[in-house]
Length: 284
Image (cartoon, rainbow, N blue to C red; front, top):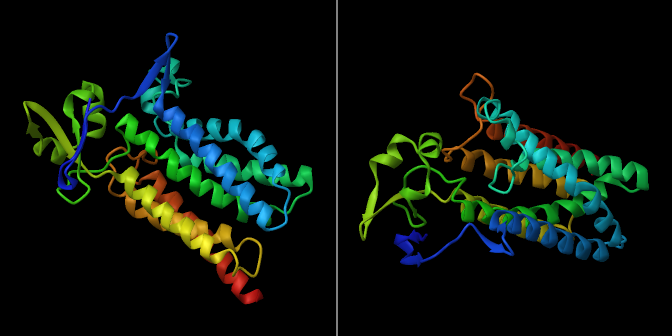
């Protein structure tokens, strides 16, 4: 099933959601998550070596953190999608099809980091400064799992990066969940196939995160205190996520409200990060 970017004159003729090996389906969503973890580890270890830390400590941290992070990401998604999962309890543990929320994973990773540092007698702020670079690398790559799953997109657009997905990819239930009226009013027919045309918000977030990562790479030799890079990540990622989340059609909402959970958490990240940066500036 193809994916099209008409304003870029780009047509990807066949984009599968996974491959089957010996009767077992491997979803590309999971592959991209795994590649994200691997890339994040490599970058964090390289930065650790540059700053005189033991690179192996980050492998130990990854092995300690990966399970809590996945559980946190899934728990976050299930909690804020409880209206669905309370009627489909058997699907709570089915993560191959998607349903991992980055914020839940990040929160679990942060808690794990501070516990890990206490046990291993490491500096949590120094490790956090190093780990956020790996985290960004993982987020950039992991977002492409959303591409293969045809999810985490925004509303209708005719802009440069407009993405077309065959309407037939979505089940009747998913159409009502993620496709709003504006999208359905702008169905595009190409060669007898109906497509929705949407904002590729996963791509926007990946590009934004790349910009934040490049800034941190530039800033790392200029930092004056441990914790500054973590604070910049909070502010930088929070700003990008706040605005990009506003474009999405599948946002998780706070119970009984119209507020998007990810936007609320993005604001909290921005406030915490800004407060830390101000504190560091005063100390300097």
